[in-house]
Image 1 (cartoon, rainbow, N blue to C red):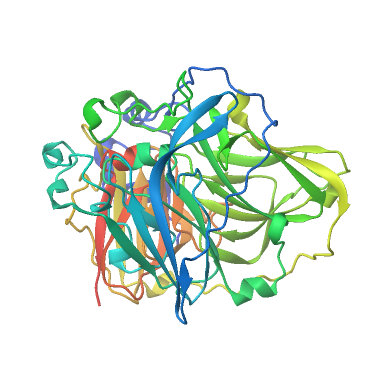
Image 2 (tube, helix red, strand yellow):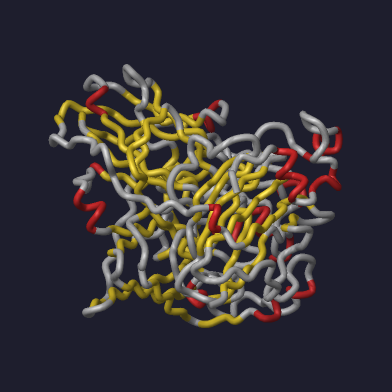
Length: 520
């Protein structure tokens, strides 16, 4: 498998020619009707004046301490509950947060050392918790019907709703212990809600937090740590007149989202770690920025302004699945929802007193700005950028035992994969553990495709090789409209049922999810 198929070949391989997508160069008339203009999603405007930019100090989520440890594991307890937060000046916002905060507390694990987290929920609806990017057994993966909570919300009858078939199989426990073996390399992971039909509104209200994995290889590089390591959870949100989160839910607590927003909910306030357009004060030194797009649907194109002399300000050292082989210099990085990019920035390239803005080049007006850095006069600590970061195993597509195609497209009422709405217990593939496969993702709209259990390597996009932001191990890939992406994947260690889905959360809630079953 070359990884350099043309767009026409990929689309025809996916069986999308029935929609007219495999026609001659350029988009055919039907495709033009299917594709919305510009970026995915629809803007939901706030009902109150937007706050001034760069007045809030950047908050950094607290690191959670284990409740106990033994020779083989660290044990944590997290409760999802409602709380009041002052996200916007002069207004209180009810958040649904892990430990009552948005973002939730950061969990830090060591590679090879087991982490056990007992989750409880005091929220009006049950939750399911997914460790995004985690290499976990299926019973700790956050299956969308393995719920945590109380009996506050009546789930009965939901199995009769369109797109919610199989809901009668949900199990709601007062608490669940999620066991993460951490048999994986250092990486920026995150944990978030994964409840069937309700992921969008529940993540939107705050159910998300960082989970950082560290290992000896990464530690030996001497990367910036402490106050010079900043996890940055970027998420757009909108607010009602009373300061509450605005979200276009269906009436009566039904799953999904209003029809006008089924292509994604876009907010008009950019939050970083829960603060609107914050300001971070930095030294003239190297900083590590762990960038996470935690938006429901908004794509980001991040760039620093002003660019330092010579450009290449964003030095990528890692992707979803950890360190790259070598640093890559970028003037900008693209992040679809759920993607992460680990970058270093040398603020000594700017004179003291410079205000450096982090911009979103895919946004206009206020949504085109994310946060700012105020460069101080303190000097760096002598850190030098390594020429080599890691050795990354290459998956050889010539050794693939199967090639599978998954077509992501709009159905009559919902979003589908291979023409099917999600149904719990129905598996679309049965890959064997330890074998390399090539998976093709073919789309109509923008779809950030996320794969559970193991990361993959991007082989190519229609008509060429991997994109500028496809390097390293990935667990989420942004597939553009009328495009195909080929990836090489090898599932290991854990047999059971896992998920493949779009990480536009409104698409996911409206049935764009499928199961695959790994076998020995």
